[in-house]
Length: 130
Image (cartoon, rainbow, N blue to C red; front, top):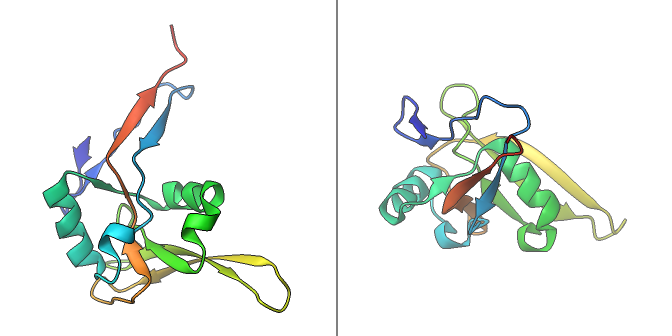
């Protein structure tokens, strides 16, 4: 892992395009629910967990839809503009019965009751190269 300007651990991507990784022990934000992204990051650092970035958040929303339904996952592993934190939310339209995904950004000091910082315990690298 490498540290960015804010001291957030970010994955070092392998040199081979055939390498990939798995997220281990994913939390969709329930542990940090109701906290701002800044408070959530401090909580994650104490627990040795890593924030998800936007691509990981989209993957989690697609594969864990019921866990994410009617809530938002803050994704401080990525930063939008200067300080904004992206988030992914899943909302079901009661009239149409369809699900809508939203990707927006929020200020780091805002908090909402059903929002939380999405995280994982580790990223486990898997390689296809011999």
